[in-house]
Length: 202
Image (cartoon, helix red, strand yellow):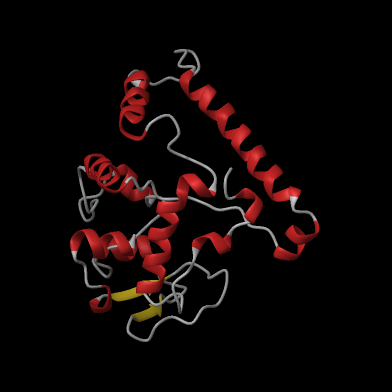
C-alpha cells in the first residue's frame, strides 16, 4: 500500500509520522529515514482515528465502527471500487493476499511437497470458484450477486486470485521493487530465487 500511495499519488513516505500497533512476527531493522514508533498498549487505534489523534490508518480489514459508518472518519477513496478497478486496468496488479512458505531444508529433502502444496491449494480454490458461480438464490441471499460476479469477471477475468509464480511474476517484481525502494531489503531481489524451482512454471 505504501508503494501504491507513493507511485500513484506522490505521497512522500519519509515525511509521514508512522505508528504501529500490531505485534511484529519478526524483528527487522527499519530505515532511519522514517519516523516510526509503536502506539502505547493502552491506546486504541480505532478510537484514536475517530478522535483525530491519528490522521489515517492502513488496514487489511475495516474497523467495526467504520463498517457501521461514523462521521469522524471515512475511506480515503469513497469510490474505492472504481479506483481499484482503474488501478488493475492500468497495472494488471491484483495485490497478493498471502504466500505459502516452507523451510528450504525440507524442500531439498522432499521437493515434491512444494508442487503438491500448490496443486492442493489450486484444487481448493477451484472448488470455491464453483460455489461462487453456483448462484442459486437459496444458497446466496444477495439480490444482485449475478451482476457482481459478471462485473468482476469483466474486469479481472476468471481467476483474480491466481496462484503460482508465473502468473504473479509482475506483481512480485513490483513488491520487491517497493521493498528495496523503501529500504526494507538491502539489495534488489531476484524474485525467482524466493520460490521453489520446481514450482516456477506451475
